[in-house]
Image 1 (tube, rainbow, N blue to C red):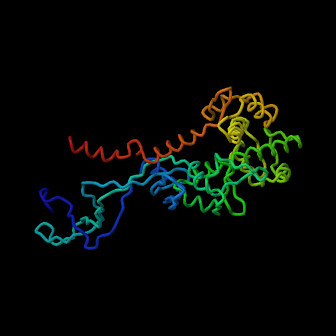
Image 2 (cartoon, one colour; image 1 turned 180 degrees about the vertical axis):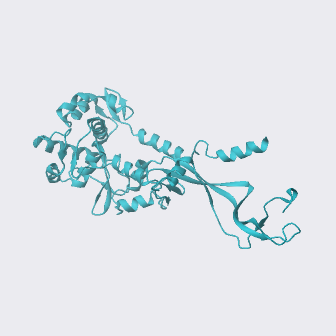
Image 3 (cartoon, one colour; image 1 turned 30 degrees about the vertical axis):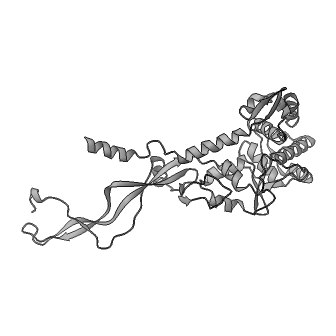
Length: 358
């Protein structure tokens, strides 16, 4: 039997070294990986596109979460081991094979996963900058949405744009719904504020004509025909309804219920943005009256500038204008979230350092 002085595990290097990357899993992702049934994980990165600024690095995505990958070098020697056997002949072992371990790889760095909250809204605005849906009945371009190269249409489908988006599918879909983006003939399109405002006016007129109560379950197809007669595709109408319905993007087999708490402030925002074609702004009383006129009568009492807090600017002579700085602030916040490491991201490194000091 080996003596206590010679106790230990023999260690050696395998003659054929392998290449490994160690991935440090945060608790949230570890729970996803070990859960039953397990979710699929996706490695994604934004396609090289000069029209998209602040493109992030590679990310790892679950169905609804995004983690930024960051390589962290270590001054410690990190080995990947596998069990083996050593044939050490001695007086104690008498040629018996002894359990041992052998290093099959050495890793000079690890990959950290940092939870981030990418803005799908900002990404889609940039990705769809050349695929703007313009109001067919309005010759005035919406300068708040249209870019300087808006006439150079580049056809991309929602699937193609989603595959290149450095974020989870769930986050992408939320941004898609928030912007009322839609597909027509396999081409993704981003509606301008003017087209959204006028398409809503067509929809509310159709609902009034057919005496449909939007706060109750109604059939979308019953109203889509009248909206299409005004020149707006049904896909745009469905995108608008998904934005303001109780069930969000999950429309119930052509049936929906409009959420008044979502709808009223959103309509006010779109209406103000669509009117923001000059620096003079809009007379406050005129805007409030027009806002009320495009809502079902029972909802009009909820019209108030308080519900648009942060979305408008006060000008002289009791005028207001859409606050374009809102999107700038959102862009800055999104960029900061993408760059900032998660709280406690290197927790095990700090723990190891503290233990060595003791």
